[in-house]
Length: 435
Image (tube, rainbow, N blue to C red; front, side, top):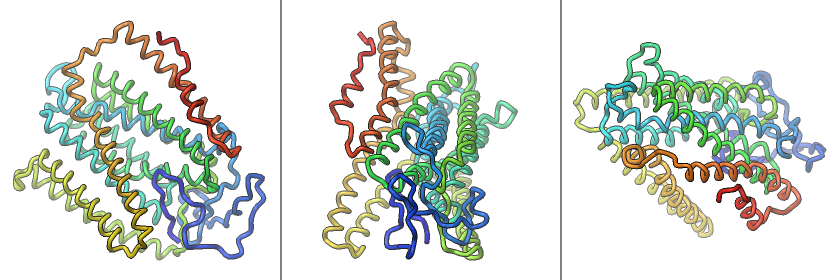
């Protein structure tokens, strides 16, 4: 039975429409979760690829990370360092492409329009490749193996971008590194969040609190990465900044492997296919993937040689329009031709509305790495006054209190309540001496 994904949201312990007759309940002292099914040979080693189903319970997980499963700490620091590397490199991306090819810290000398078009295409593929990345995890490798391989490919991409430090050509190593990062992020990003959901098969407020803690790791990595990589890359050498992002991803991989045993059975491939059928599915997928890569490579070559008279800026615009058309066409098909009831159509309409709002938010959010970056570089006075420094320090001290609030949210959720909005506001308004 193929495992079902939930993206970054919570997931059910049992796949919809399936039940396992005769499954016994184990008394774990935490609500009686399902006893794990036997793990087949070859799956216990971490890859989770085998012919029989693999358990997805929480057997053997200790709950000592702010009252949450210890596996949450493993995923917290894995995603912390992955976001450190992603946002650290993103802070340098457009600036490096737009920097002059001469000087103490040369770049690629692209125009702002060309640089932001490359950034837009890069971001497009980061989001799009999460779809095949999730499919690979669900049907071929399992989340656990996908996350590790994705992290390795991301680290390879960052170090490839830093290739000129060891004599590699500048532009080819830069673009090849971007390709590696796109592929690795597609494997890692959707699946690490899905594993967080698997740590909480009981669901409820406790799982919500677990995701809150997990996203604090994302936020801290997103703050630290641009600060350190940006300082090193812009002030000294762009490729040193790319290297630091790669070392950050390496730390995430080390943290992941050291804490992998704390994940229990989360992230293993769940399938009832035999080894031969699984191998056949794998060959079919990789054949299609190789064909798609070949088509993209031929198209890129024809564009670069001028055979196809299409600029990067135009390509980025057309892909944006195509993305909107495909998304709307998908919802139209599902809502009107998917054979759903009237109530289900109304619920799909709500999902469509939330989808539009989320798309608008992320469209604005991603401007932080493209057109707004050269504007912030050229126009503002970036010197930090004494008053601004005090305010920044106060804001950091306030943020430092937020992780301490998360265990309170999880504890209250476990007792059947949720920390009230008034209490949360008071936590945010702690006197940090900002006056």
